[in-house]
Image (cartoon, rainbow, N blue to C red):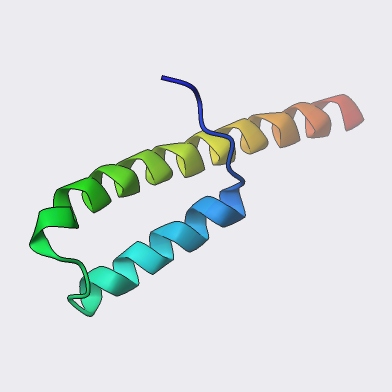
Length: 65
């Protein structure tokens, strides 16, 4: 499976859209499983980006000290 190239901001916006649809019961039951799977992927992408950014910042701060 190819790694998806999506920015953190895009992933977060899509997550917020799906959550909003769920809260308003706008997602048909037939699509719910697919939406949950998509949310899981988006959450993983966000976590990975945050972890990578945190490591990069720590490295920068370490070299600046």
